[in-house]
Every structure is written in structure tokens, then in C-alpha cells.
Length: 146
Image 1 (cartoon, rainbow, N blue to C red):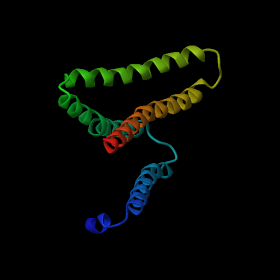
Image 2 (cartoon, rainbow, N blue to C red):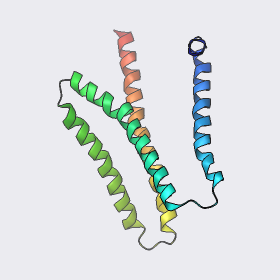
Image 3 (cartoon, rainbow, N blue to C red):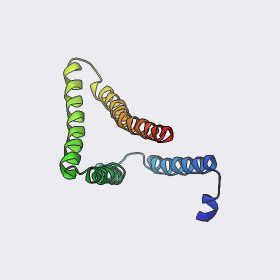
């Protein structure tokens, strides 16, 4: 079955992969239709599970390649990765405090804060990803010129 997937064209592979990701995301979010009211303990367990999945994704997609790259560049890998990791956490913490400072007097602060923090987090996530893709593109472009 996997061999037949590999033999498909790249756009069809991408379409199937996106469809699979959409399906799994939809199934995960469809759990909300099973409950009228969610027990706080169950909600805490689901949030903990989601946090664990995100930490694993962070390690395997970002931290592990960064450690390998820093090692190949003969840098102190643990120091580079630690500074980057805690710098990202500090950036989110500062964003939270700055938002609290600007919205002291406004009504309905909690929903607005969640929305702004979500948009900011996604934007901040996409900026380094875009830089990496641009760097990879420039590297390929320069290799073709040489």
C-alpha cells in the first residue's frame, strides 16, 4: 500500500497527505460534539495530552534538527538550542504582559486576549519557518549558479 502511494505524482501525494491531516484534525475536534458539558478533570487531561503532542512535535521537528545542525557547525549545541527555546518562551511571556498592560480597562478582555495571543503565536511560528524556507531556496539557487 505504501509503495503505491510513493508511485503517485507529487501533487496527488500532497493532496492525500493534506486530506489525511484534515481528517485526523476533524476527528480530534469532533469529540466536542459528544459532550454537553466537559468535566474540568477531563479537560485538563485533554489539554495535557495536546501539550505533550506539541512538545514532541517541537522536539522532533525543530530542536533535534537544530541540535544536529549546531553540532555540524561545531557550535555548543545545548547552549544554542537552550537560548532559542527559552527566548521563544520569554517572547510569549512578554507578549502576555504587554497585552495585559494595554487592555487594563477594556471589557471582555479574556476572549480578546485569547484571540490576539493565538494570532500572535501563529504569526511568530510562521516567521522563522518562512525564513528557513527562504534560506533553503536561496541555497538551492546559489548551488545552481555555481
